[in-house]
Image (cartoon, rainbow, N blue to C red):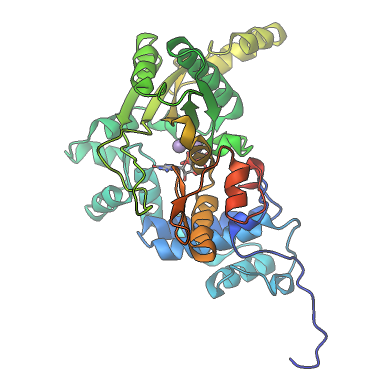
Length: 387
Ligand code: GTP
Ligand code: MN
Ligand code: MN
């Protein structure tokens, strides 16, 4: 090696995903899609460590500002383990990776994907069922397993919930949520979070963060919102959980019973196709027949509505910046930010607070920018957090 001219790496890339700008969908979608399959397969096997290693490789490639053409361009890049490198090399040389193709067609991966695709079914449950030989919805239904309420809804709306939510549908849901929130608590604020805030064009659900500028006014709000949604016939399913976050002297932000904060609702909305009257009217003027056909196909089974997964989270204004950062994602971006905080700054970051272990105190923030600044990170806008 000595004496060789020092070759500058093709790309400069930082090792933590939260130090990089990662737009959607990136310039290396062939590679990132393949690594995502391997990550998912590891996650479905319950192998979190292996999953994370593939996710980090995927995130790194997604952040590069041009297409990788050959293995030489990978030299000097962080986050790429031996296994990921082999897969990438295969893809660059042959256009496919046999490992990825085998994974995708393996009975286990297919069954686990199908079963965890049921709302309310996690990896553990799916694994148990798969071990019993259950590989399809039909087999599940004849197995005699008793399903909880979430899983029953998950089966009932399986087709709808596995059809990606479009940007237009997310906007229509936003209008519904804003209308309801403002009618039960004027002055409350509704913010679109999750993948749609990151600029994604589709998602598996729609995420909202709700707050009120006067601390305390948000208490009990989730129940009023649910009641109003139900009275308007907009909910197909809901499960509300109360989070009991409270700051502790040791800064761990451990849940405690004395102060109930951060209520959250997992729900399934009934999105009718007249939810956006403006759009429907405009489209009908252009081509009434097309609108009619689309309307028939909106829900599975030819009904004029469709089921959409919606997450509602209520945060007190004092924690809003942390909640917004935490609920915007991506999952890997969040994970990496917490890892950076602990390892590089000796701080612990959550969706509620930031605690400085050296100074032994909480660091306040009223915007995401302030949180990045506390952590010594350059600000990354939501659309750059698609790691
Ligand atoms: P799609 O919905 O698949 O399009 O992507 P998404 O990025 O919106 O994913 P998702 O809706 O699952 O999650 C959005 C953000 O909320 C992610 O950053 C998650 O890490 C975060 N999140 C999801 N569940 C929880 C939770 O139980 N607690 C906290 N604190 N954050 C969560
Ligand atoms: Mn989401
Ligand atoms: Mn969500």
